[in-house]
Image 1: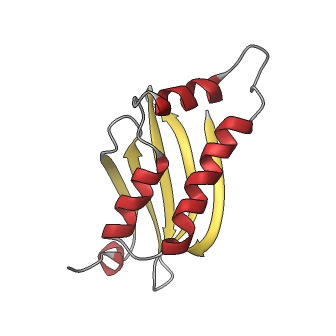
Image 2 (image 1 turned 30 degrees about the horizontal axis):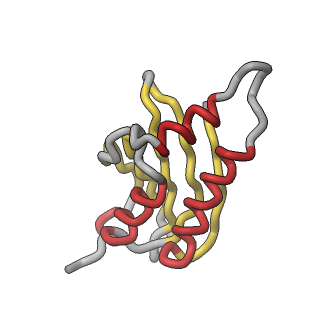
Image 3 (image 1 turned 90 degrees about the vertical axis):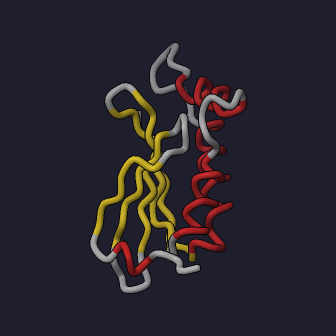
Length: 121
């Protein structure tokens, strides 16, 4: 299963839009196949607290990194759900962040110039 949303807005302004788009996409997607209601299961799991809301992931990124959210994906990898967020850095670099959807824990960062995107205290 993969759900992909594309964005090209400043991160600070677009994070709520990204989260809302993901929620709406989950709520409005037709079943992938007859009898397949994965989207509804995902929505219910977020409501029950089994999965971290996308807003939590985007809020964390906003606190720690500067850039624009380009793409948000929810994928199933090796039996677990993973949020993937691709961002465009201030120098034009593309960085992909992966988060465990159940815990919200960051499980990977790929890209060049990642330290240039880090917010400094």
